Image (tube, rainbow, N blue to C red; front, side, top):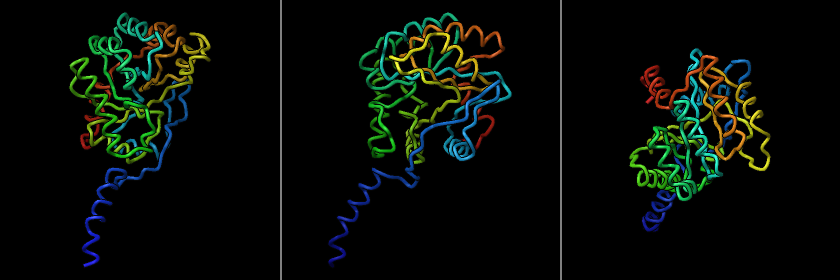
Length: 264
C-alpha cells in the first residue's frame, strides 16, 4: 500500500523528466569543421557526418556540382540587411535568413521584405539560447514563437529549417526539432564576421569567401557585418564567373530526398 501511495509522485516525476530529456543523448556539440581550401569541400568528420545523416540535417551539398547556398543569421538589425537584400535582388540570388524573436520585434518590415522577395525565412529560436541547456518543452516554445510571429507578419505558415543558436546542439535537440518539422542547417563556409567593432573591410570578407569556397558550400554570413554588406555584390559576381550557381535550401533538400528516399 505504501508503494501504491507513492505511484502518483513517481508518475509526476517521469512526466517532468519527459519534458527535460528524451531518449537521445543531450551531450552538447559545437559545430565545427575543417575549412575548404582550393575548391576542396569542408569536412566535419565521421562522427558529425553520421549524426547529420541520422537526423536528416545538412552542412554542404553535392561536392561534384558547383551549386552553392547563401544563408544569413539575423540575431539583430545593424543597418545592413536592406543593402544585402538590394544586392540579392539585383543579382537574382536566393538566400535563407535565420531570424530570432528580437529580429522579428525590431525589424518586421525587413522580415516582410525577405518573404515578399522570395527568400526563405528560417528559425534561429526566439531568445537565442543554448538549446542543450533548456527543456524539451522550452525548445518547442522557442521554435513555435518564431514560426507564429513570422506567419503573422508574412503569411508564411510553415518553417522547415532551423539553425541552432550559437552552433550548439545535441542529439536530443536535433530529435526535438525534427519532431517539430525542422531540419538543422549547418554550414561549410564561415569566418569571424559578427563582431561589429572588429570589422576589417570588404576585402577581408571577399577573401575569406573566395579562399574557402567549394562545390556544394553552404555559406554562413551575418547581416550585422558592414564588411559583408560591402563585399557581397563582388562576391556573387565573381563566384558566378567561376561557374557557381546560387541555389535555395529547398533545392538542396529536394535533391537530398531524391538521392536518399529513406532519409525522411
